[in-house]
Image 1 (spheres, rainbow, N blue to C red):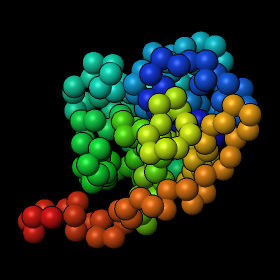
Image 2 (image 1 turned 120 degrees about the vertical axis):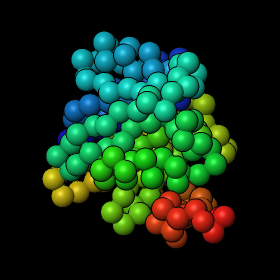
Image 3 (image 1 turned 135 degrees about the vertical axis):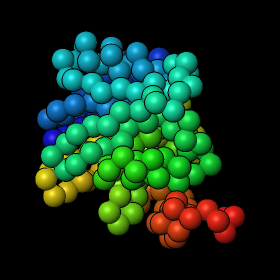
Image 4 (image 1 turned 45 degrees about the vertical axis):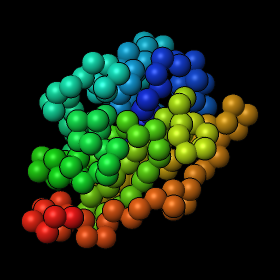
Amino acid sequence: MRFLVVSDTHGDIETAMRVVETLDGIDRILHLGDYVRDGWLMESRTAIPVTAVKGNMDGSFSNEDYQILNTEFGKIYLTHGHMEAAKYGPESLLYKASSLGCKAAMYGHTHIPLYRDLGGMYLLNPGSLTHPRGNRPGSYAVVTTSPDSFQATILYWDPDERTNSEGADKDKKNFSSGFLRRVFNDSDGQ
């Protein structure tokens, strides 16, 4: 399957629609919150199915505002990330995804794109298409799954052209180092 993954569109449905128009072969759109109604508008305008989760700007303050997406690759944990304190690091949401038997976790909230293969768990934040942080242009992700693979690419939105972001998040902390120790054993206080 091929997914368009967006988050934190904050009501700018026109930019989101321009991105959809540039892509072929999208089977489903994943909207990771803020504003979830943008996801529903994308579905009504494109007839592409949407799976969406609520974010903090949607009035979500429940630890149950997440979804599990079943794919041929396996289960994918979808959340906005605010209830898992993703702004401070992904460990909490990775723990929750792992405890639910997921092979990948996707989140938003930080407005900063991130993609990591953590050796058995994939972590993806598409960033914000319309309100990016970190002096970056707006971003989104395209994910392709098969029974034995999960591939994600973060793309930056330029009204005139899309550019591939491979390697663009190298300045971000590598969360794979000590991942299991940090997630499953907090006794050392780190």
